Amino acid sequence: MKTNVGTLDRIARVILGLVLITLTLTGAVGVWGWIGILPLATAALGRCPAYTLLGVSTCPMKRA
Image 1: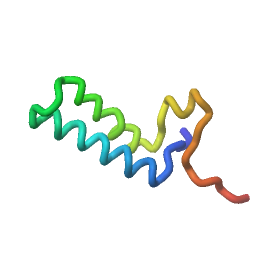
Image 2: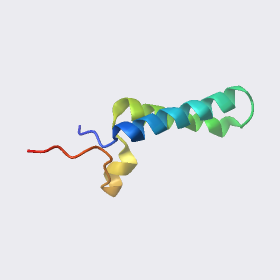
Image 3: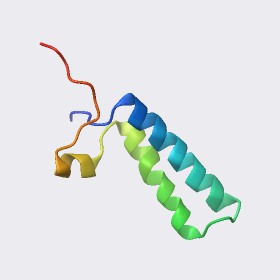
């Protein structure tokens, strides 16, 4: 499996995921806030299925 999520993208996904989960736990948003698990998972794996389908990659290109 090739990674398609770059470092800055991973950081943004972790922050977004943690914010959504925190808002859910504090009651500021409803149950839908648990969707924050998805950005955390894609950041941890370094792979985003949506990016694969769209042919997008935020990883820096490797030089040969």
